[in-house]
Length: 171
Image (cartoon, rainbow, N blue to C red; front, side, top):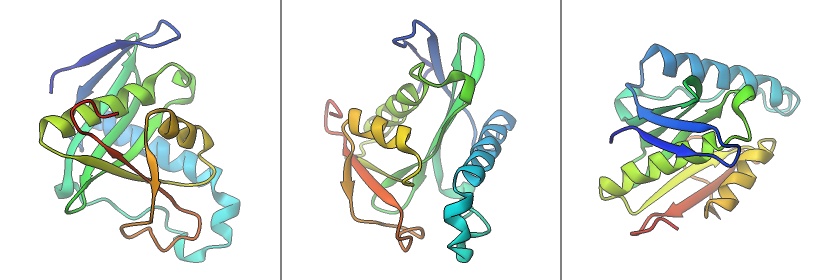
């Protein structure tokens, strides 16, 4: 996949490029994501001691694609695809606070969908939590629909799971 550049509604230029999972820029963005989610979910996680270690580690060998986004040349976001068997799961969609509401997550998702489609995938899946209301709204706008839980996090009583059939147009 080559770099993808889009213009967001805020007239910012969003460029998405593929990087290795272990690239320093990708690792730094994932660390920011985990820190933010730790704060956001602190109260909820207090009721679930089994989750005190945070989200399960991701086996880098199962990552099939990682992308980062830049807004007007500044690093702004991250997302990846994890091979979970029959499906690929969207993981660690994150936009830095200063870049939010500028089309970054939308561009990241579009890049992952394009890559998956190019690789012959028919759908993508993802999971999120109830306190990520902006993500839930984005997924609804982008044509994702709710599905039953899957994977190692499916035992949570608060997880929300989505799929998006890709087809030819992805919508």
